[in-house]
Amino acid sequence: MSTAVDYPPGPRGLPVIGNTVALSRDIFAFFEELRDEYGRVASYDVFGTDACMIAHPDAIQQVLLGNHEAFEKGEVLTRNLADAMGEGLFVSGGEQWQNQRSQVQPAFYRERLTTYVPEMRATAAETVDQWHDGMIVDVNDVMTATTMDVLGRTLFGVDVTDHPVVSEASEAMLARFDTSRFWSFLPDRLPTPTNRRYKRKLGELQEFVDELAQQRREQHPENRGDDLLSILVGFVEASDLSQEEFRDNMVTFLFAGHETTALGLTYTFLCLAQHPDEQAALQAELDAVCDETVTAEDLPKLERLDRVIDEALRLYPPVYMFFREAARDVELQGYTIPEGTTLVLPQWAVHRDPAWWDDPEVFRPKRFAGDPDRPEYAYFPFGGGPRHCIGMRFARMEMKTILATVLDTYTFELVSDPNPDLIASTNLKPGGPIEIELHE
Image (cartoon, rainbow, N blue to C red):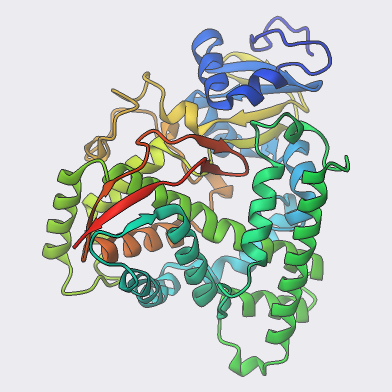
């Protein structure tokens, strides 16, 4: 570890393994305690890897936006996700990332996204049609299936719900990167049962993606449409995208395109189910804005619904931390961060920091009304800067459409634990069912 006097302070770890035990015991408490005891820029060590927590909004803005060229995705992220999506948009860097970003961007233009709303609404309506008064629903299971269906219909033009390979690969990835399990910090080359299952399921998913590509290639270009799958297949045919880049981007969008949105919806239901007054206010807004069913034109007018989603994502950010690596020596908040240091930007610890949020553990959507008296990067569920989540608008439109469709028919109350256990893996996942009881 650097001996510079201006290296960020932090706890002394154990020989060899550093602070890994404390991280695996409770990663959320670890970062909160690091923030409170050592400051919002603090250091720690994982198996000899020098790491710094960056939890001050001004420093986060510098990393993601103001001085973003001094930081790269880094070895921790690329090593862990190389097999699944190493050549894709989420992990790649430099010119490769810039080329891919420009290639897929048309699928996420605002005018293109609005054409997805009818399919989002129809999918949500099919889900609601299977419900009845008094029914108890596990919202994470239902929202995972619903968002997967939306993704298949809109971005890939296929029904992916009949293929369990996606959910099985997701479960294998959850187990592989579950930070509460000590071995998640070990290299994936070790032949543990968890690692072997992860590699096997990932291979099956990659075969499934290749099959989708082959089916689309067999269609005449004029009959393919302009969804994301067709765009990517076209770039492969033009030799502007390698087969590995295509496959890794498909895996990236299959995971990121449904799982994070499903989790965002799950936690929004969790919050709303405990606040019937907020449900009533949202239904009043829907009655005032929407004529029978929600449309793309209605979505920007649903401001209260925006605030509810913002607050749920503040309390329960599906992506609960970002990784970066210093590409050169940099200064953050008066500390020198040496080249090669792993940086962790923990949304959980920032979104719940009492320095920026009054009563940070309380669900209070009105805190997002008006001009906030807080730093911009005290809230960053979708990242920021040039590498902010390309699917942010898609996800928010989908969440609003699904919530509006549900609230048009039902109110609901929570019948499971109001403080569910959480699993910090690739995303922030509930450790058990989040169940609501429906009332027409």
